[in-house]
Image (cartoon, rainbow, N blue to C red; front, side, top):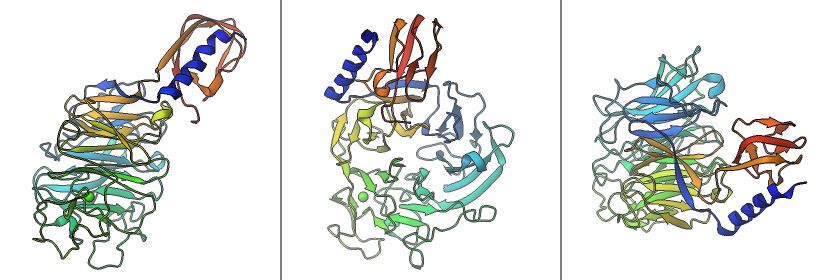
Length: 452
Ligand SMILES: [Ca+2]
């Protein structure tokens, strides 16, 4: 066995363990216009779907080509200004079989949030059948801002969660977020597998916390949110991370375990983060306990409004569960849209700040394997989130011994020319069946100890 090729790999892995991770970003693809959401269809196609606020959903295929024809174009239906427009996309967990996708947008004329279902074309997997439109929810917006916009399926209960802002203006003047007869300022949870072919094209999960309580809208899963612009589920355990944009004091992240059916009150507008809201009074509000009451659930992470180590508008991200960067695994990432500060928050809620990160992050998104991407709204660019201590590629040339590379470390992704032997590549390992000579330098992409 020729150890020359293996020793550098061994010492390289040791150094990663010794020095930990350094958060970094790498341009993945540019050319989008005001992108605000990124997701995948989990159908094995490797496609990324990029939502543009102006009303188009673009496909970035697995070869990193932006398809010329949008997946969907509803630009005629929406108002793209401010916090309005096409804001969110979620694929049904069984999209591969039923072709359903769900979007969240604000209408062009009278500001109204629409939650709608479309079906992918029977004949072209890269086009939505626009005649398939079904509208599930219409929620009137009293002001132009704080429209929420995110919607996602829980990997645990399979229900669709919809983040609703408090309706806008400033300070929630009508106290919508604590008004249980309003869907504004709430996290909603609906079952899209009920009434699939009849209005309203969804049903209420029997385990929703306020089912049977006449003073609550039954869609409500949690109350007390100001503008949960971006939330996500941890794909490893189904827990929910909600980033809630603040008013004047605190930007916050809330973390709630999977299977919570108790009806969390996240505090707004009695509290802003862990602070008592500075101008809270009961004007417009139902009679509510004061801000020190235990009925309000505090965030697990928050920051202040100064740009040096805080910001003014949080864009929530995801817990990294990809395979390529082991030292990022289990950490939640979020950014401030205005200050460009970015944080990693670990499972004990310890945080580290990374300044001068991606400009104007609107959202993060996962590909099918859990690799993470950050999206710059102003630059129209998608960045891959990386650990800079882990090189993305490594090259070898010359003779490779017949062996299996150690530590499940490598796979071959680039075309190679080989003489004198056969290379067998499995999902985990590079296996060389007999001694070979590589004519050209061989690029090996680093992957996934413990994954697949
Ligand atoms: Ca709160």
